[in-house]
Amino acid sequence: MTVRDILKMGDPRLLRVAQPVTDFDSDALHLLISDMLDTMRAVNGAGLAAPQIGVDLQLVIFGSNDNNPRYPDRPVVPPTVLINPVISPLGDGEEEDWEGCLSVPGLRAVVPRWTRIHYSGFDQYGDPFERTVDGFHARVVQHECDHLIGKLYPMRVRDFSRFGYADVLFPGIADTEND
Image 1 (cartoon, rainbow, N blue to C red):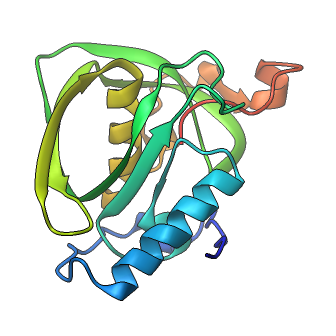
Image 2 (cartoon, rainbow, N blue to C red):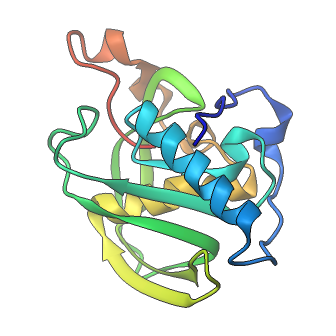
């Protein structure tokens, strides 16, 4: 359909708390999801949140495959439309890993995330679903859902000595990692 512009850090719309989706299985919602998928694919993203394209709704999409050049060594995450999500950590375990973001282009940092989570929400038709996940899948979900509460990954960085430009941190490697 349409590749949308992705808002960049500094745009106040990225700091808002998104509104719940109340109109499921509508033409407008399906068109928005189609545009988000086109946008995410155009930049080889692993996920995209509606606020990143200026839409103030609790909607994220994510998924990666083994053909994505930004994630050559990451496990596959199934394509998912997640609306009005609720995330619960399972245990106290955290792990740190590198993240990037389409709204924070060119930069990367080590970000702590819960290791294992349970998430629930709705698909575009209003059907509820839930999953228990860990590792990269859990990281992607947490990263994308942070956008729905006005958080960008730099707000979660604990050690700024592990935050910088991807081309400086990882010379010769394309801007990789989460989003």
